[in-house]
Amino acid sequence: MKKLPALFLACTLGASAFAQPPVPATIAKPTATLAAETPSPDADSPDKIIGRFFAQLQKREVDLAYDQLTRGTKIAERADDVRTLKSKTKEAITVFGPMLGYDSVVTKKVGTRLVSYTLLSLGKEFPLRWRFYFYKPMDTWKLIDIRVDDRLAAMFDETDDGRTRDERP
Image (cartoon, rainbow, N blue to C red; front, side, top):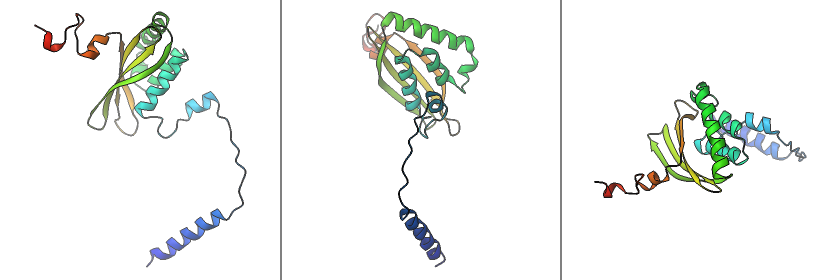
């Protein structure tokens, strides 16, 4: 019975909110910096993190892509490794052509807090294989490892000589 007055009050307040005259909406266009610093509630999901990363690579913003991808991770603390990743990625874009997009290949979960994503970046001339590993110790997904290579035969379960596991001696 005690819940009835609270329910009535909530309904009354809700109804009075609808009775207000409409207020014209003001739409502010966020700046690129503000949008990058104020992530949406689901911006921290691995899918969103990877999507932003590849979108920046498509714009040839390699340094920004890696800076945002590794922000707040142990990977960012290894400055030489990040510098090498940036350099090799710029070189790959030069050699294999501009990035046209990406395809998701495999997502593997181990429990509820560890996940890996294997993707293909679609260069104009050649794809690359990317592997991202994320861990969620508390409330936020963190990148814990990233690997990129051009070993596409491994995606077909083949060795470098073209044989599959079943065909190996």
